[in-house]
Length: 194
Image 1: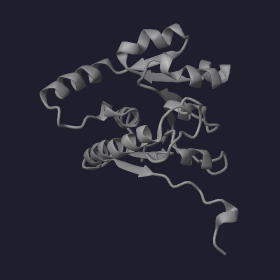
Image 2 (image 1 turned 60 degrees about the vertical axis):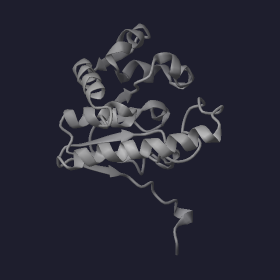
Image 3 (image 1 turned 180 degrees about the vertical axis):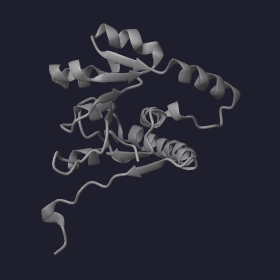
């Protein structure tokens, strides 16, 4: 079975360590999750580079050089100007736009960055996708400092909408036989029941 791992920026991502995180295949970091000390091969971000200035400033130079960025075709040049290696999905974006206009009720995989990352790994042969830090709750990200000025109501609104979208997309893939697993963070030794 082909397995890919995806690191999402939720608070529980910080509970994983090199010892407890055992990826069984390539690893994709979504948005701020690229700042995690856990190893990743690809950075998936659908927003313009300017949105990630705070993240970019925190990334070590060697991480900038080795990271492959998955982005929207419309942002390819902006990322390349920063010296990043880029891979985009122009055909998928064209299909998404046409499908969205024709049927705005249908949930498409490019609705969220996490589901875009999942679609790409599935398209590359993943039969099982393991998600770390995919909490969709809380009022902060595990890493980065670009979330300090968000009001609690912004986070609340986000977590009312995004989980529904995520669940609908996952249901579509599971119907096709793809296994999507949210990995539970390890329980700290001092928190275990005796």
